[in-house]
Amino acid sequence: PEAMQGMTAEMMGEMPPEAMQGMDAAMMDMMPPHAMQGMDADMMANMPPEAMTGMDAAMMEFMPSEAMSGMDASMMDMMPPHAMQGMDADMMASMPPHAMGGMDAPMMANMPPDAMGGMDADMMGAMPPPAMAGAYGEMVAQIPPGALEGMDMSMITSIPLEAVESVDW
Image (cartoon, rainbow, N blue to C red):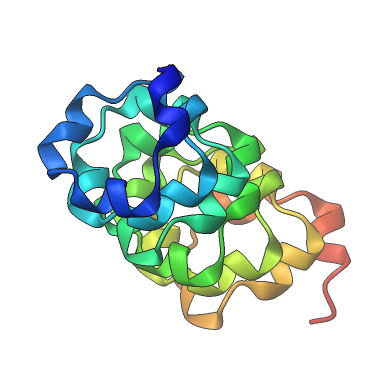
């Protein structure tokens, strides 16, 4: 894992996607955040879900948005909540709806409010309702109207009342 400390974006970009199958959390934890600039969707799709536990917000900030299209629910489920602080709307919009199945309340609570701008109805409909317990006012205000169409009553009732009350509807 220590060898990953020298990884650069260029080196990452030259790796065959299949090489990511050998990645683990310790290797990810050692990798400099800027190396993530070399990640793409095929690489992400080949990474074992357990490797996601080595991610952090700085790594997410450097990751190209299109790489997120390689995510799935099992990967999302393994991502540490604090890593979500590095998400933005473009990254969210690049994720396949089925990846939302791995979201939970602590992830939602750590996500910047503007990341919700990348949500659509299919993504919202694929999210487990209990994840909405992590929503907060600024975040709820950023949910695009089209994404709201994907919510059902169990999702709506999972949003903390103070989050809903703080939005200027």
